[in-house]
Amino acid sequence: MEFFLNSFFATAKLKIAIIFVGLIFILSITNLSAQTNSEKPKRIVSINLCTDQLLMALVETERIISVSHLARDSSISRFSDKAKNLHINYGMAEEIYLLKPDLVLAGEYSKKYVVAVIRELGLNIVTVPVANSLEAMRNNLLKLAAILGEEAKAKIIISKVDNLFSLKNTYSKKPVAIVWRTRGLIDGPGTLVHEMLQVHGFRNLAKNLGRGQLGNINLEQIIMTRPDLVIIPESKNGYPSLSQLVFKHPALTSLDRLNKPWLTIMRFPEWGLMCGGPQVLKAYELLASIRMNLLAKK
Amino acid sequence: MEYNNKHLVPYLSYAGLLFLLAALVTVLFLMSVLWGTAEIPIITFLDVLLGNESPTGIILLELRLPRAILALAVGASLGMSGAALQGLLRNPLAEPGLIGVSGCAALGSVIVFYTGLSVTYSFALPLGGMIGACLSVGLLYCLAGRDPSILTIILAGVAINTVAGALTILALNLAPNPFAAFEVFFWLLGSLTDRSMNHLFVALPFIVIGTCFLLSTRRGLDALTLGEDVAFSLGINIKSLQTRIVLGIALAVGASVSVAGVIGFVGLIVPHLLRPFVGYSPGYLLIPCALGGAALTLAADIVVRFATQGPELQLGVLTSLIGAPFFLVLVIKMRREGQ
Image (cartoon, helix red, strand yellow):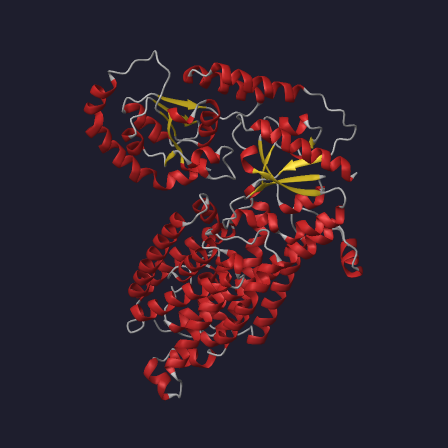
């Protein structure tokens, strides 16, 4: 999503960025040569929502200089409260350089030219891939914790997650569930959401329909397949959103009425459905309570 | 540009033409209701009539029906507006999308939507679209009304479109929703997917009123082909005629764009295809163009459902893919005729 947004303005920014590199290059050499690698990074900047989450969970706020502007949005950022007291950035090379960070964290899908320019400027930048499975999430946490010098904290989080996900559920029935995002996108096998649904004893409709990692479904298909649970992203902030309109379609209300007590349309915080990270712990709890509710309805 | 009568089609009367188009619209409307991702068995109609609720019944009544009616209304208003605009400006290249009416309507809708006005008052959305459309037609008329040459109109249209586009992006940058630009990027390409009866109730009244305004200009449009002075001497109130056309287009296109996004080129293609059948009379062209526009939009809206795997193709993308080559052919043809 970010990629599409960014590509609009890519060329103009790139030109500015290239000029900027030329102006700043000499300064940067003198500036950074004094830095040593032995200490923990103390001036950390994150320019991606997912790395914001990892950073705020692992590191005390004193060491964080800036997080991305999306980190303050409570519907997509688990640690939005912490972010409220932090400086925010818009992921532009110039502002990041002026913050004089000793470590910059970027996501796999962060603006490619910004990452390149920051690297050119001689800053220490680390890109973290998207976690599409528990395994990938574990690796991300360990890799980042080693860089941040917070291995102990990461190990505690990982052991908590492992404990939860190794619980064997005793549900005899397996209701069909689907995580339905904006523009009809659904999470199929090979995603963290799919793993979470399975752990809670759901069958993922995306898998039943033969969809891959990132599939697609329309309103007609939802109505025809009548899943037991439709999880839709919650818009906590209540700002108007065109792509959220489909979740308010009267046809969904009709279907809910028709299927009672089974089909339920549940709103779920969006931060629990994106970027695998420590916030998965909370998302796990929420999903568990939804599962209990479904059992009670039966 | 003067119309001539050399391409009159003698074997098809006006009533015959209307009947054929109405039949085509009816068939396409039924196909639009019946064809989609989900198969609708005939028994569903019985269920719906008896008041039994079923998934296919919900799809039929709450998804397909509003979508088909909207396609019909939006297509009709775009087709008729194109015909009226071409008559008013006496220019065959005038089209709501090309000259910036749709762009300004989109700007109005975007402002109303992202300020949250449309959440509080649902009628604010078409109103925003209509105000935008009204401003653009008025502006265009001021810029090009005295000298309706092709070049002036197209250039004025380019200017209006550019300003509308820039202001839309500005409005999105100021919107509280961080994904507003992404959402609108798709919305601007036009679509009727997953619209509900609520959209219909909000937009349809304005579309109907706008269409009535346009229909009242039939005689005036015909007289206007002879030039403003002759039309005046024939007893046509030019000011009133202009006002009704501008208002009619603003209402119809503004309301359409506010629920369906920008669906381009319908107002260009349809009048051109139908003009020879009505003896090049802009007044007589209005009703066939409404029917033709409805048919084209219904047909395009059926095609987008099956054209791609995964997410539906945007309706405006399809009409532009058909319309842009058509536009080029038209330009080449006009150049040849001019030589």
